[in-house]
Image (cartoon, rainbow, N blue to C red; front, side, top):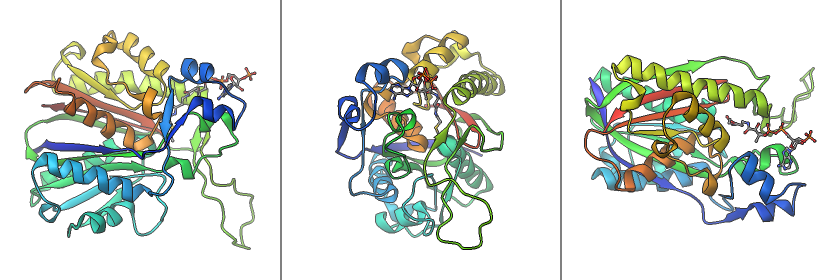
Length: 317
Ligand code: ACO
């Protein structure tokens, strides 16, 4: 048994931080950020944590699906920036929306939504689940080093969600992990333990930008080709690609290597920056609500990020 997507939802906090505002905080410029990354502005949460944003996205997805929270049998969420190690972000969402089902998080950084969706799809395939909620929610602003211009200009906060049910529209999926922290990591610090023998980096996103860039382009191209092959279609037959919004140049290069026109890619990095695991579901929700989708359209979701990790899936609308 496969799944179908019944409804999607997204939420971003109100506070807009423009490149010009960032230029007053670190040595950067609107021109550099637009050209090198493709971001014009991002949303930053001043009061809501990841779960609170996730719950708002979840409510919209439930409304779109036409069901209520008490009908959910499972919640699988993804985050790297929850305010709490415990309860999980998903457990908190369960409380906030008034659901009564099991809820847990997966951690696969920016690929998190793809890992969460595939996990939920496996639960559905096992049987006994009528409705499941899958979400990605991030308050990345709390884990950024706001004095580091090479990372703080890239990211933003937000949440996206989807309600799934048994169906036949999840045509192919693939997940990939290349474990290690040398390219991308988010150390959590060591608290005040007097027993640590080694120094531990403080809480922040540490990223080797160019290594991540190369990995990202290779993975988008490889993942899209792989899911197309698994579904028995050509990449030309894919109607829309919803990529992780990390850098417009990554999307542009991947589009050229795949020989797929940019019009088929959903792009909103200019408005939100990189929202990690929330990036794909926010973009997916924009596509769904744009009115562009026709029944039967083929949509590829694709992400890459810390882990290192990547993932993709093909959905028939
Ligand atoms: N403003 C101005 N100059 C800057 C800035 C900035 N914000 N940031 C870096 N620079 C400078 C550098 O200091 C460097 O100067 P130098 O030549 O004098 O040394 C110059 O710009 C070029 O720096 P690079 O790091 O080589 O810049 P690059 O073109 O590679 O762009 C970027 C950096 C945007 C990070 C890019 O490499 C990238 O997007 N990488 C991928 C990021 C990504 O995909 N992340 C997703 C995963 S995140 C996750 O999973 C949590």
